[in-house]
Structures are given as C-alpha cells and as structure tokens.
Image (tube, rainbow, N blue to C red):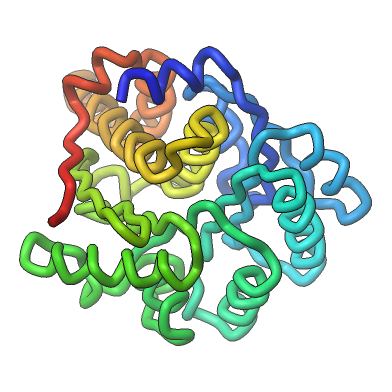
Length: 274
C-alpha cells in the first residue's frame, strides 16, 4: 500500500482530463495534491496530441454536451493505442437518454481500465437502464453490510464483461476485477455535501494507476481508500475549527497533499470480500 502511494509521488504522472466544468478546478488541485499533474483539454483538434504526452486519461460525462463526445472518443482511442489507462465516470447514466447512450457508445469504442460511479450509475452500465436521482445514487440502491457480497459478485461479473476494474463508490465502496473484490470503508457522510469528490477521485485513481500499471485493481482500491481517509482527516479538522462545507473542500485537498505512506497504511480500511 505504501509503495502504491510512493510510486505516484516519485513518478508524477501526467493525467489528461475531459471532465465537467463544475468541478474542474478542484479536480486539478486534487491531482496536484496526490502527486500527479493535470492537463485539461476537450477540443477535438487538440485531444489526441495531449493524450499522447500524458500517462492516463479521465473521461467524465458530468456536464455532457454533444461537442465533447467526439473528443472523448478520439482521446480514448489514442490512449488505448498507447497503452495508457483510461478511467470512465458515467455521471448520471440512467438519468437521461443522451447520458445513457453516450455511456454505451464510449464502452463500445474505448477500452477502459476503470469504470467508477455510484451504484445506480454502475447498474445502468450493467443493464442499460437504471434509476438515479439526478447525478446521485437512488437510495434504494445503497450498498450495505447486508448486500455486500451480492454487490461484490455483481461488480466482478461486470468486470468480466467490460474488462475494466469496477469501482462503486458510496457509504461502503466496492472495487473489483473479475476475480477479486475489495470493500473500503473510509470516508465520511459529509463528503457527499460538497460537489466534486467523485470527480476528484477519478483523478486520484488515474494517477495511482498510471504510477502502478502492473497492479490496477489494488492501485484503484488504494486510491479510493486514500481519498476516503483524507475525507476523515478533513472532517475532523472542519469540526475542530467550527467550519462548514467550504472548509471541508479545502481541508480535503490539504489532507491529500499531506498524506504519506505510513498514514495510509495505518488509516486505510480495505478488506477483501470473499
């Protein structure tokens, strides 16, 4: 676990983001805080060159528009050609026809190393239809202790069909490939009260994978645990200083900047689901 983080700090992976404009600044700052470097480009005539000089690509459809769909495909195909990990965040898949159809076009034309979303979005990826509350998970879909094994089995099956590591994030996170699944119980509920924690996590996962290409499953699991642990640290500081959600957002990035391998090994709550 410690080596996963230290590889990121040592290699400073450059990550290309085609992401949503609501959270782009926080995503860039979180990428820098975790030890990587961000570059944002969604212009069709630019993305192939930008992806070529990067180590990983994130495609996030949070503020989807028709202009950026082709650049996503172009960049994704170039990253595949170069062997760079590509992360998909199918934000709001199931909430609209355009989001759902775009998600499935991306899955058809681009090979993804990781697909990360809430349980409702991931169910949409699996079934082609789903139930979401805007871009949030439907409460009926929540991952709990009672359905943990069932959800892990579902994630493994989806990994088999897509070839991607599946990261389902929520109160309990599940990260799985076709053979193994991890449950991660880091994080605090207050993280859901600030916009962009999932988008930031896309970048952390991309950086961790780019720096640990031989171990994508565990790198993704450690990335999820790392941001969750930083959320715990940030929330404590917010409460200690009588802050609010704006403080939590800042403290979250601060915590990632200060995170080291020893802190991660001590605080990460990762367990394999059998």
